[in-house]
Image (cartoon, rainbow, N blue to C red; front, side):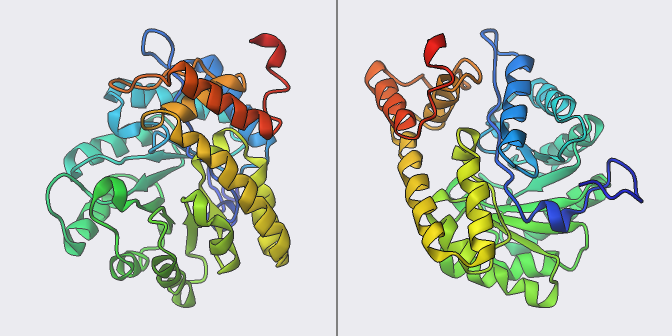
Length: 315
């Protein structure tokens, strides 16, 4: 919830980041513009499912591949749809500091509540380069920053040593770790010994139960676009120390996560969202939509999880 003493746009990040903050898809219309109606449906779907925040124009939102205009329109539409019910965190995952700084200015101007920032990429960078990059973005806006470690996309990981230095800045509120490496996650959790309000969230669906039981704070799941409640329930089960419930939920999550195998890149996720009535399944160029066999496989997975009931009569 917003801090009532500070006003409606000041959020208690220590609480917000102890929940589920899915990385939202970016619904596009046939002309490549932002589908505002689908954005509204997606935001309502996620907040009704118990999510505590909305991460937009990140990986699942295809942020690095969107045009500057598309990024601005997406943030604006998401902020409008959220209408103060939950904070909007905007990704600025661009290859160097200059473009990322401009994206940060844009995100702040469009009403984002926080930035999500990872390593520069394409050229070689080290920890000091990453630190300067993130410090430059902190200087560019007044927004808090959630760090993002996703070395499978940036090549260069944000190592725990670098994160520990950056965590001395109060506006660095936490980190999303999508590396999938449990040892790395454990080292990030150790930062909390010095700074208890620093939040460590997991972004790899395959290890979410283990990470929550290790002491993780929250989850940022891509497949949460389709079914957020599994992840909300997982956070609750881990908080209760219910290991068996965590195991059962992790099995369901892994089964649903298989949909990513049926399409290029994120195209399967966009198709899955269309099957449940959100958007038209279009992702950005140059990805192609899943073929008919892949679409059938995605539909079968969703059917196993009871996710087609509401839209079965519309297709």
